[in-house]
Length: 219
Image (cartoon, rainbow, N blue to C red):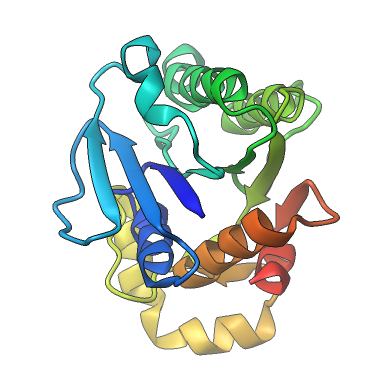
């Protein structure tokens, strides 16, 4: 498989990239983003794209891929709904719309979050925006799947860009194994997310929206 990966420098993207590079069935990974991954690997190519809303100049480089794993996003903390939507709605929809034209029917997996509001009309801002994003992507001519993880444990040194999440992870690291045992429907890991994406890209899935328990099962 040839994989497009957006958000490879974030915590989830780091874990997904690791699984892709270790998977023998993956022949190429193109990491697209504003900053390169700084990882050297024979399967990996970095494509620095400063304008995440305009892909016309690089359309030829985005053709011929089997799947896109979209792990790019930003926290809602300190942002207005308009600012949050500019990153978490406009960008994934721009990517999805472009890829639907270049690679119609390709697998597209979007990392959303537990609690996403599919009605788009709830009281929680980030959940409304994520719900709008999911609905738009699911209606594009793509084989699209929405991942809604709750708590994500980094397994191989992946680092979150969000300071609050880094503090949370450091505080709860000693009880991670217990959390996975007691709350299997709430906890997943970076490597499980990566493996689930790869398995779904190969074999599909009966569910289009996957919560943490479904992600773990798909992994």
